[in-house]
Image 1 (cartoon, rainbow, N blue to C red):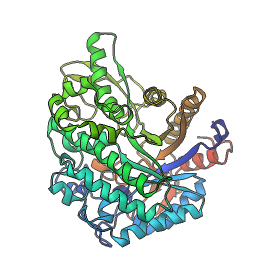
Image 2: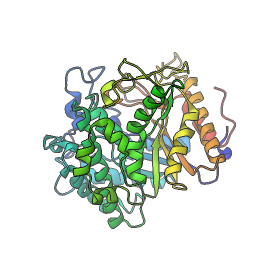
Image 3: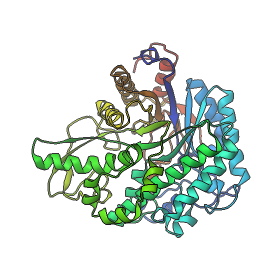
Length: 460
């Protein structure tokens, strides 16, 4: 597999998220986010850590941009920390926060790397959560205000924008299972948060278009290939439920302007959506986008059964408590996620079927492994290189099939604070020593660099 196997103009980049890498959580006017608060809850984070320092990217960003340049990346997808722009989620923009992202974007452009900015990668200002968070419709309006402020200040240096990252996680892990910030366990009411997130996307899209008419704007959904474990009607219904909650509940309103009726019935939320998800809401949510970002990591194989679902955890799938997730025997990453590169093609097909020809990007794909630093200081991670090559091959196959895939972003550029797992999981192609903050490219990074130079990649 070489870069020349992909079409001219195909974007290859890497991705990160603000709370996972920036640190400096109390500097230059940044306010508190829901993840700052959640990380302090005893037992919420696997290793008891916080993102207060993370990778210290706020101070070390020039080094990280240099790493991207050395690798030969075309683009860098980063997220903007809302509380760094508006400490409490309202009011005028914080100049220090805007200046940080301007310096980053300008430096990227100077090195020929296109900045892709995500407006929301989960770090809601805690002040807004105190007022109801994404359960409160007003949060969608505040998100639009924030989007307008950022676009007005950065629209001349950032042309590619993503409104939301993975609203499934924000809604169902944040408000159903409590596994993610803000740590609430509200069952099917979490679907209300999902609607307000999507409404926020629609309002932010309007704000971006009004402020930077030439902007390239989309949103990012985390999608799973969902397959029934067997041929029974019960297993088929299990797959319908999980595909409904994981995929169709977000794809359909964004691309078709309607929520899937069967999913609302599964949730027991048909009446709430009839009363609260207005025609105007759905028109705004489904306003044309320039591309759809897809984060892909694994496939779900599901069966009917009395055991609770284990893929989320169970309470992240309200209405699907009697679905069980089945292991197929495929290799797994350290996260326990099965590796199915062909599943990436499945989700690209699913999205393209709803909006034929809409440009698609894999905005995250990568793998965690228990990396070890060798006696020579090198980090040998052949499994990650193999994982990336397999998914680049899947991208090649998708393009050959005629699917409108136009780019692929590796998750992640550097090891980082991995949400509820803290520092116990490493996804980076660049190793970070969290004590010294030393960055060391892993073997997988060298593979990526060779791939991007269209050299024969170094032996894994």
